[in-house]
Length: 251
Image 1 (cartoon, rainbow, N blue to C red):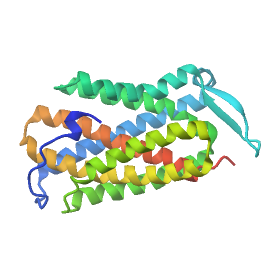
Image 2 (image 1 turned 45 degrees about the vertical axis):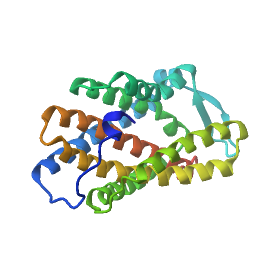
Image 3 (image 1 turned 120 degrees about the vertical axis):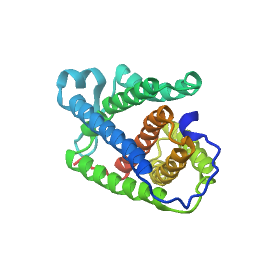
Image 4 (image 1 turned 90 degrees about the vertical axis):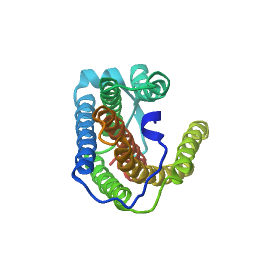
């Protein structure tokens, strides 16, 4: 999602011995990502359980055939939903040489905004199905990240293919806004899960290689920790949302 975390020269062997420095770096990334998910969960809970906040961000659109309430977003809720994308795109132009504080600010701003927007799932689906899908996402994410960390296969060539897949998903989702095809939405959701699962493995391996390229540069590692956590966080959230479309229950 940004030059620092998506682009590097890519040299070096994938057959690397495990060392304490790499473990510490990766744990820093995962810990930050975990804290981000926790903050998002708290904010999502607040937006669904505090009526004053819910009314500002979401609006009742009607009821489905089963009599379940269907919520949409207010104007403010829509702005919050699209704000992370604007921040990420803007950071690619503004943060050419990101600092530790700048990378941290971007990470927590994106996490907070996404967390506030996630309340829509809690309103439209049962708490049980949200919890179930979260566990499924966590297992899938953990497995793909472990694969990316341990595999000796160079996954560099997958990068362009996966990013093109993300662009294709966005285009298909925009088209489906006008078509309204449930079958197309199911296909988009399945592809979305597969693409972001692949990106999880890909980004994990890139983080591992980036650590060796930084050669102990503390400032660079601090920035890489934030951007690495951001990439993995976004992969997790996107997997979760596509899985909710497939397995979420309203009843």
